[in-house]
Image (cartoon, rainbow, N blue to C red):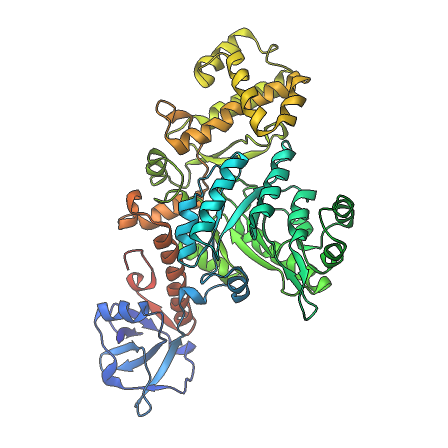
Length: 543
C-alpha cells in the first residue's frame, strides 16, 4: 500500500520532503509499489500495524508499508508501527491487567456508572466506579454488580477523602476490604488518613522470593507536590503504629509497609471537572514526574512508581502530548460523562455534547463546603454555580440560619431551595441519620455547622438531579466538567460522535488512542523532512 508525497519545488499537493533532514536508511523498495492515490495515502498511514516507508517513485515521493529485498529505490523516511496498545507504560498495563494505558476516571454519584466500568473493562480498559457521594449500601450493590460482570477485573472504585465525614471514608474502606476490591482511585486527598493507609497495608504479603506482593493497589490523583510526595513514600510510621495497635494490620504487614510506596500510580490531575486546582498539565505533569524521579531514586521501589496524566485531555493531540511528556497512562473523565453508559440523565448528556471550552466555571463543593473548596462545573444552561456561590457568601457572613435577614432567607427559599428551610433541615436530619450520624450530632450543638448542612442539601441534591433528570430543576443541575470536554466537542464536530446518542465509551477511548498513535507516526515522518498536507496530517474520528 502506498501514498504520494511531493518533492520540494514541484507543484503537487500532498506531502513535502526536505532533503536536508534525510536519513540514510538501508532499506529499499520497488518503485512500482509507490502510488499517488489520496485514499491510499490515508490507508497506508492508518494501517498502524505496519511501518511506513517513504521513497521516490516516477510520480514523486510516496510511501509503502513493506520493503523489498531486491528493491531498487532508497527509503528516505520511516515511521514504525504503532498501535493503541503500544502507547504508555507496559508495567501499568501488566499490573492492572489491561490492554491499554487508559483510565476512565471516577465521577462521583455513580456518574462513572456500573455500565461504564463494565463496558470499558470488557474492552481492556481500566475504569473507576464513582462511589463518592453514594450511601454505603448503594456502593456495595454496585461493586457486586461489577464483580459479577468482571470477576477477574479490571476495575477500580473511587475512594474520596471526606474530612468533614470521616465515617464515610472509614465505612468505604471497610466495605472495600470485605468485598475484595483490589484497586481504588484515591481522590481529593489533602493528606494521608489512617483509612487509606489501612486499605493499602491490609493487602500486603510476602512472595516466596522475598518480594512484596501488593494486593491492594492505589491510584492517587494529586495536583500538589506535597500531597504527591505523601503517596509516593511509604506509609507514615505513626499511622502504621496506630493501625497495628488497633489490630487492623499484622506485624508482618507493618514491616512490609516500609518497602512499598502508598500508591502504585500517581495521576497528575490538571484542569479537570469536579475537584481541581486548575493546573495546566503542561506544567503539572513534568513537576510530578520530577518529584517521582526524586523519590524513586531515594527508595528504589520495585515495581517503580508511575505517573499518569488526567484533566485537560480531550483530543488525540493532548493525549499524545501527555504520552510524549512521559505519562505512563492517561485519564479521561469529562469526555466519558457525555457517553451513553454514563450515569447522567439524557438532558445532561445532551447539554454536555454542546459545551465549549469557555462554558465552565468554579463553584463551592458540597463535600468540603465549610473549607471553601471549589470544583469545576458547567455554567451553560444552569444557574447552579451562581446559586451555590450565593449560599457560600451567606455562610461566610452569618453564624446561623436565624441570623440571615428575613428578606434574604425568603429569597433563597423561593429561588434556590423552593422550600422552607425548617423543612429542609428535617430532610437533612433524615439523610445524615443514615449517611453519617456523627456529623449530625456535631451539627446539633453548632448553629454554624447546621447552616452548612442545610446549604449542602442543595449542593448535594443538585448533582443527583442532574443524574436522574429531575424535571423542573434543570437550571439547578450541578454538572462537573473541565474545558477538555469543549476541546473534544470541537474535535468531533461534523462527525458521528457529535451526536451524544452515538458516543460509546469504548469507541471514544479507541479513537483517542488510535488518533494519538497516528499523530505520533506523522511526527516521526516530520522529523525526517516529510511534511504532510493538512488532510493527511490530522486525525478525525471518522477516519
